[in-house]
Amino acid sequence: MRSLLRSFRFALRGILFCICNERNMRIHLVVAVYVFTLSHFFPLSNVEYAVLIISIVMVIAAEIINTAIEEFVDISSPSFDPLARIAKDTAAGAVFVTAVGAVGVALCIFWKPEGFCNIGRYFTDNPSMLIVAGVFTVLALIFIFAGPNRMRTVVKTNRKSNEHKK
Image 1 (cartoon, rainbow, N blue to C red):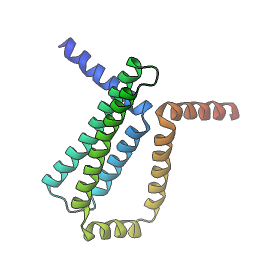
Image 2: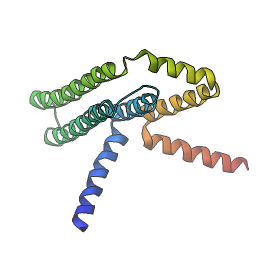
Image 3: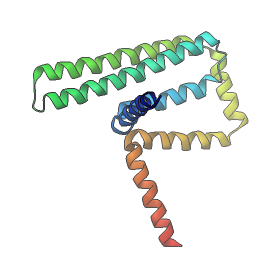
Image 4: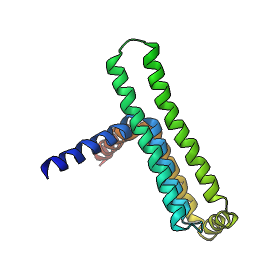
């Protein structure tokens, strides 16, 4: 049992490494959150949700594998090597193919006008939610471009400056 828990810990550490160090992983995660949030406005079946989940998981898994390949290649070939570049480029290509496939799945599933009407109606009925959506979008962009490590530093810096003001 202990070794099983350790293996989960190692896996989570790998996922967290990708989130903290790979901007594209953060992009995929933010897009996944948006897709699931907006999916509630569309009349989706269980099968459509399952296809969405599979698509998102495949993109995230491909990004994790890509990161592992890039890190291994960097260790194995610290100086430029055309074969190392090919390995890294093809791993990145695999992520690109899965991401394009996921976009295709999303287009097929979300090509329903009533869902877009539901979104419009929701924000018309709840205009204050536009502010919430705007704040979430700003936070998502900060998460994507600054990453969790720099976000944590900014939050700590803001706390310290607020404490000094008191």
